[in-house]
Image (cartoon, helix red, strand yellow):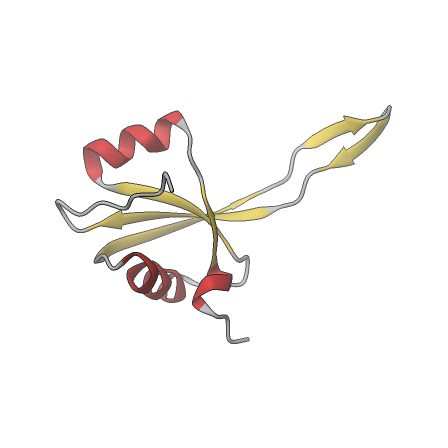
Length: 95
């Protein structure tokens, strides 16, 4: 299945831990398409944000059980990619 670069990167993941990693080691996290592989993620980030990617780590995050109107339900599973950029490069994801 061929994915478009804008289908691969769905949204940035912004947490305190990730924000600290951005400042210290140039790591950014994105929610990505579940079928995307590391090469596709690297190419998409480099093309969209015009940066050089050194490493891509991926994690399959399982959904959590929640209660909705007294009924148990599960949130969706998703895939997270942690992208390490070349030294002294940054992505402005606050837009």
